[in-house]
Image (cartoon, rainbow, N blue to C red; front, side, top):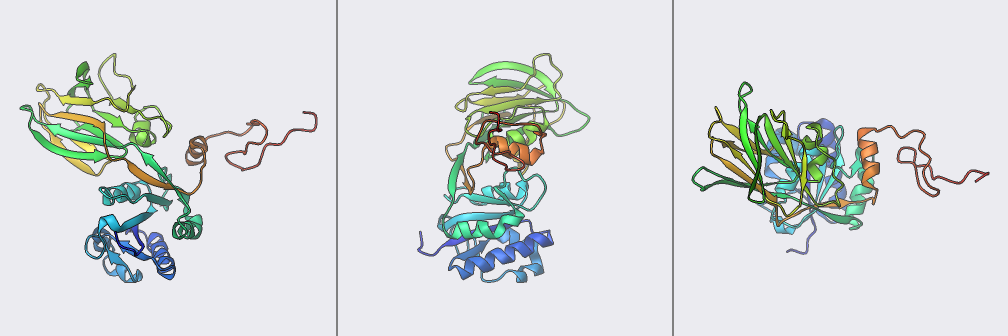
Length: 319
């Protein structure tokens, strides 16, 4: 690893406000003696607008992945997932700055950008490990056809809208149930607020290590969401009687076709994802803020702060 500080800057390259913010981040990093680094894919997406960013190195050409100290991400959850993919195989944590809508994976909002960069330069942040999934696809003969990983979820889905997918679900090498469905979501705690949440699955606090399994529009009596051990191996087999093919999607970014007889095995990855955190806020508060949950009227114990107003609870005069 080199002595120079290299900070990867990942951005949503099709939004003017994000490009402007990336330019400011690059300027501040250079002024502090650090080198901003951009991915070639981002430069390709930027095209002529790349001239708005100055003094950067290029990941994989000028700077090796192992020399990246941290990734600053400007965008929504999709951009953060792409950043996690870019730093996969290295040790750099990902710091998300929400430039989108919900931005559940983001640590802070855009109005805290300058403070966030200052904290990065001062190395004033914590690193949190998040469980990731290792995903393998084998064919009917047991030959490995595809291997990948996921931070949020691995989803087996039908490829054709008009056809149902016939699957059997297995937990730790034991068959559980089979049914026709639109698909099956296998989620991490991090992904429990993403596709898993939209599909009716449980929200899992990040410190609870577990894997969730949620059938999508299943035609079965026993097709409820399940939560299994983080060390379990979940498998979904596409039954031979399926009329058509399925498709595997991991984090909505990496895909592979699943013909009848294909088997998707999902288990904990030996390589977690690292997220940089600036504030030790509770996950409950994050849920309230991101989903704008109604908590008006809550009093709470003395000394606690309101998750929306930030007001500290003090005892009433007659208490």
